[in-house]
Image 1 (cartoon, rainbow, N blue to C red):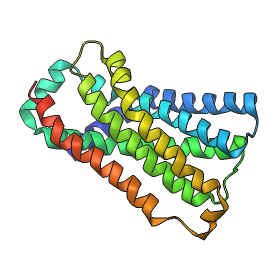
Image 2: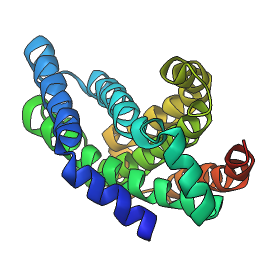
Image 3: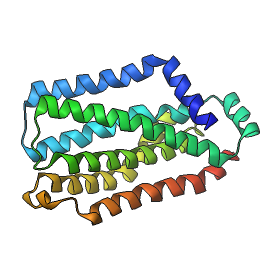
Image 4: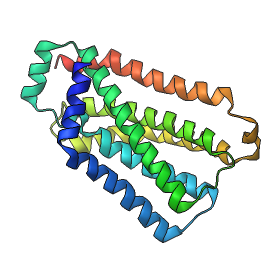
Length: 213
């Protein structure tokens, strides 16, 4: 928890980073609104997840990349790798959840609400954002060990994130279907939770090997 509080305090002190991401979200959604108005449901869904992808990249990428080598050596001497990566995961989940809420509110306010049932879509968006956050947290940890950090993260992230994005877009389409009025399919929630937990477990297992480098 001390490491989590450290990241939270640094974020509150360096508010320009948080405000920069919020400005990015607002400007992106506003430009999409000016260009497309209130599009049909499939276009709306695709634009939402495209925006969500770039938000997660900008918000999560700095979690490891901002840590200097000297600071990492200090953390190496005072904590174990599991505590360190769990603190990063929890902080990034909180940050991405806030960004997802802001993105969703702006999308619905400016570009309309084409969903048949908004509440299930909100749940899917939060679970999907959590999955993206977990993936990019793991990729940021790997990229932090290389010199070309940003480019390596993009190279590693593209083949990993595309299948999950395709799955999220397909699952979220259910919120635009009439059959979704009956309620959220339990299989959808369990599948998203399993994906998120699987990525988190892989991060906890693999990060100690990076920690020793």
